[in-house]
Image (tube, rainbow, N blue to C red):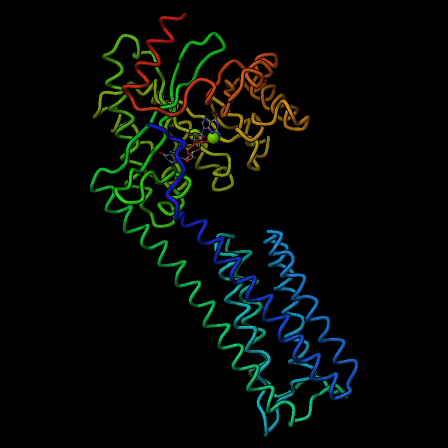
Length: 447
Ligand code: C2E
Ligand code: MG
Ligand code: MG
């Protein structure tokens, strides 16, 4: 069983990224073509300053295209949104002043921009996404509801604006249609994955794999339970893809209790096998799941129901969770400790945990994130971060485990710096429970 098999080819995140790129190409095309059209128009009319401004729009479009081509998606988006916002509001306020003959239409592009921002910032927190999207929409409301604008010699005559309103309104409606299409495809993707996830739980398509955790002497002291979804058509779907959807839809709650129940049943089974009875088992818990007021009680009843020894169970929290309601987290960690369940801080070094919080957490273990372990040999900064985490863990009396250890060099570096617990492909990929039993008895025979 290969846990590293690629996720199914039509990964919905990859499709989302393709949609975002399609939107950027479309935006670049719009700016470039509108810029080119109006440049020629004003040039023919002999209004040089306006023609030059339109050249600016054309160049912005070309730059967005170049950034998209070189896969600098974020830079492309921010240039597109900023450039387009400035041009649209500027033109609407200075040149496109409504009259009895022709309405103002330039502001309609702000609707397109708002939709584009909504698609691009889909996964960003609301406090960032809403002001950007809302800013575009509110400016549109303002420009649609007022007949005023700046009085200057640049205001376009109605003869131009009558033709322009057809071009603008037509192009903006096409833009809205294209973006709505992209957003609807995005939503359908998520909801079909959600429906599939619901069915998968009922049909028993989830499995747990176990990745051994090993000491510097090669002794297997525990394992981490890692969730896998074997979809009948899509094949193996990685947790990186379905956990976020499960979190968004609340399905993580039943899924998380299935994981906890299965892991505890496994622990109870190991307790009956002499070679396996000492193993600890770490279970990943998501923020939503840990946030439930009954979480600790659930852990306690699940352990009691399955016959698992709570002292061998470890709950893995991620550092990013600490950003929410730290007091509640600390209370729950204490309550878990009281019933014997350990806690580990996963992916340590990637979040923003403040050191003052860290010393208040009744943690048992820090897990050095694999991104630092990967480059300890090649990158001096990552090596320093790994060393700092090891020292921090020691000072705060936590055990430190390194994840993603793939080479003997990485292990030797970590050992030389006083980290003696490892998890990674150097030892084993995540494997099924029978394969783990084989691995443990083999390691036992060697030591
Ligand atoms: P994680 O908890 O940090 O798990 C470690 C990930 O690194 C696993 O990916 C594991 O297969 C992978 N890994 C282990 N050793 C190596 C190595 O030497 N090299 C490399 N490149 N990778 C290694 P996986 O299984 O795809 O899981 C990804 C993440 O999904 C996990 O990260 C965890 O955050 C989440 N996850 C997995 N199972 C569950 C679960 O039951 N519940 C929840 N809430 N999240 C889960
Ligand atoms: Mg983990
Ligand atoms: Mg991790």
